Image 1 (cartoon, rainbow, N blue to C red):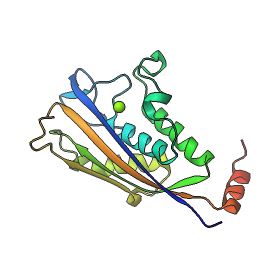
Image 2: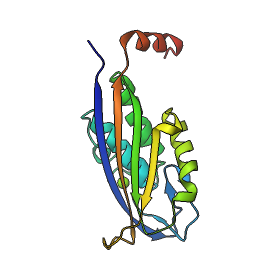
Image 3: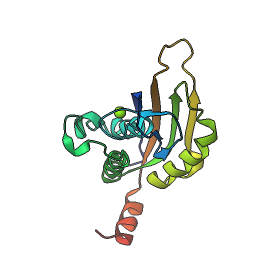
Image 4: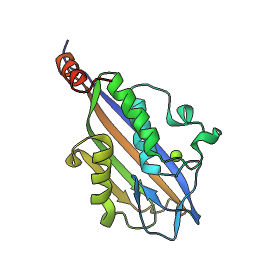
Amino acid sequence: MGFLMKIGYGWDSHEFRSGVLLKIGGIEIPHSKGLGGHSDGDVLLHAITDALLGALAAPDIGTLFSPSDSRWKGADSALFLAEALRRVKAAGYRIVNIDSTLILAGPKIGPHAAAIRKHLSELMEVAHDCIGVKAKTPEGMGTDNAAIAHAVVLLESVPRNVRRKSQKKSPR
Ligand code: MG
């Protein structure tokens, strides 16, 4: 059988709130406000996590990590991403590339984009030139007190012989 590809799409939004650290893509960004939410409010990690889960037709982030579950209060969103990555691997797939767009009035993401891409590259074991992070301001949308993230991912199936080799290398 030839190799298979799957596309995934994710979207998220969080409201800005005072007295919270701003975390986007796992990076702390200096700003007067952070993003509210049950976890650390990392809107970009949530969108990417949902894109990965969506590609697998798996339950979404809110189903796996319910906001009403006290275990996820203030949780590092890297945990959610790690579960999605575990499922990608278990299904016999790997990430080809990821693209994302943030929509927020501020702060400017451009100066932090390289650091975010580097961090995402380490979290997901994907080359940084296979991770797109773009940002726009919400012109005419009236969402100046929110951060919005869209993400798409492409997965490809890992050939069985490669899967067997990598399993030998890292026995569990
Ligand atoms: Mg969220």
